[in-house]
Image (cartoon, rainbow, N blue to C red):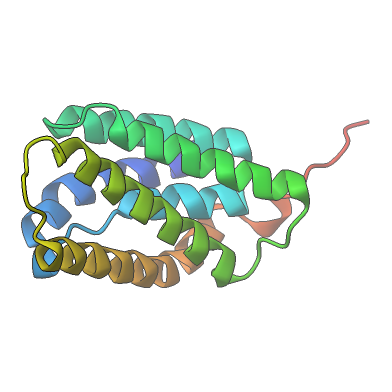
Length: 167
């Protein structure tokens, strides 16, 4: 795989996340393109590619946003590490279910961290107003997993996902 393809895909995901998705907000939620890309790269490529993409993408999203500095970086790096752990455990990473599961857990963890940061500022939780955007973001992220899987397969051919001994 050529590293500039991955860098261009990461930059495009960050720009779309900050520019388009933040303004679009379907039903009040912002889908997380960078999270989906990090998970798909982590399951299709190597851990170092996913970690580099997660760190760079998270830092760019944290710098673009104003609140909760470091949260995007932390969630994206944890998602990349989860993908590396899945590779290390030897689980099959070819199907869509594993990527969807990791994206779903990371989405819920990300939203729970945001809600926990707001816990001191709110006295009563409007659960209907909280659950609806989280559910919409979760569904949108899972749809993005299905849409981005073929593109990541083009960027990262399947033969680079397995380690080979040199020599």
